Amino acid sequence: MATMKAQPAVYGIMGEFDSPEALTKAVHRAHKLGYRKMDAFSPFPIEEINETIGPHDTGVPRLVLIFGLLGAAGGFILQSIAAWIDYPINIGGRALNIIAWPAFIPITFEAGVLSAAFAATFGMIGLNGLPSPYHPVFNVPGFDRASQDAFFLCIEATDPMFGGASGFLRQAGAVRVSVVEH
Image 1 (cartoon, rainbow, N blue to C red):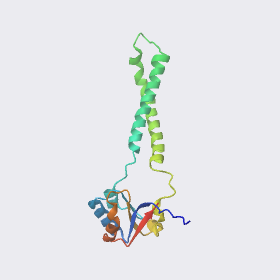
Image 2: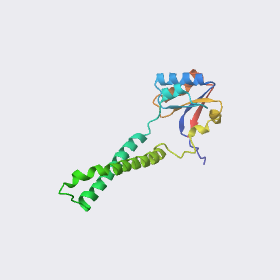
Image 3: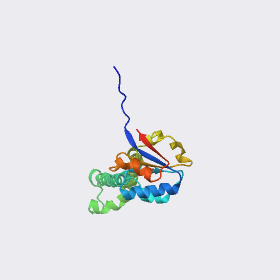
Image 4: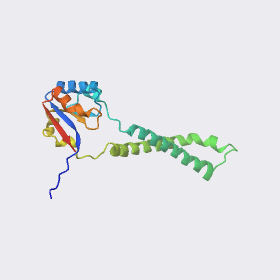
């Protein structure tokens, strides 16, 4: 009985370009045509490409804001319970909640900063997929030159317009077009 080999899943299509100008033109053209799930690789940063592709939203800023606010609220509530419920000190017959709250500001601030810092650290590690010693683009022949003298544009298979990506990269002037397998 013959065993059938499973076909590898496709991550995307990658085109290699011979100059930063050619890569920049291809990225602008791809963006204009509606490709959004793409990434460019070059040995040095290219501002025009960063502006066109833009950063990928990981959700880390929202996570930091939420945990910072929750940490600040938690710090304030913890101090309030201690000062007004567990250990109330009535000085001069004044109401307990009027006197104490300004003293809570430093701890409230520090609890918020501490919670936000932990959320930023662990959120970045988790949501950015770190540590990531392997990425599917490493399978492309010649990709090791991306840190030396080669320029690559990868259009991911999750892009709605992925069907025409191979033809687009050839039209855009790619020296070599490769399928990126998982």
